[in-house]
Amino acid sequence: MLGDAPRSGRPPRLSPEQWEDLTATLNASPTEAGYDEPAWTPELVRSHILDTYDVEYSHAHMYRMLAKAGLSRSG
Figure 1 (cartoon, rainbow, N blue to C red):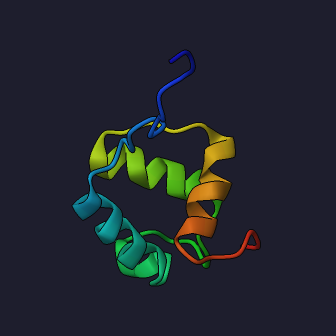
Figure 2 (cartoon, helix red, strand yellow):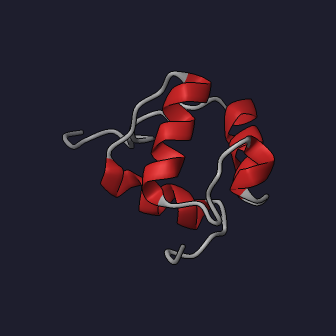
């Protein structure tokens, strides 16, 4: 039979354990993670992921990461 097989998509770059750790970090104040910032911003999240997990994402992807972690776009 012709057709594409089901695809699972691109695998996440962060492991499930790293994602759990990141989500906990993002649901706390940035000051608790050692940053002198009042709120998580896409730029700060991107920098934190690169520094902590040595994984780089695009700036645009940070909005999806923040939403997935349960945070709004504001901040």
